[in-house]
Amino acid sequence: MQVASLITDDDFKYTGRSKEDCTCDLCGNRATAYWSSDSKIFVCARCATNILPRLIADATIRKYSQYGVYLSVLEKVVVNFKEAVIVILTRHP
Image 1 (cartoon, rainbow, N blue to C red):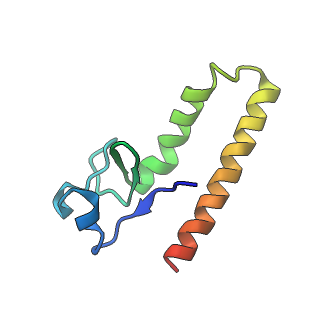
Image 2: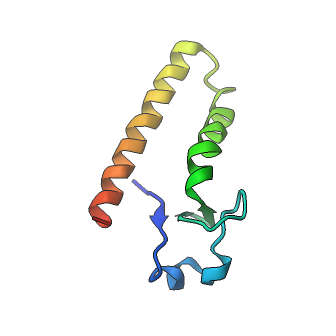
């Protein structure tokens, strides 16, 4: 499972950005985490809780338009979120 990385003062050399450039790609506030894949996506806590859930809904609702099917997708999102929290808490106690 791949999860986002928290950004601490020691992490900037790994992000590919300077401390000043570690801003949220969605709103421009200081990023608190980033997702690393083919590129890096930086997000702040506000956008992670307010914008990203809406993005998940927008990205999945057309494919899983039946209500019962969509509930199982939502359950999967919740399980993945809980697993990611456990991983992050074990990395950053």
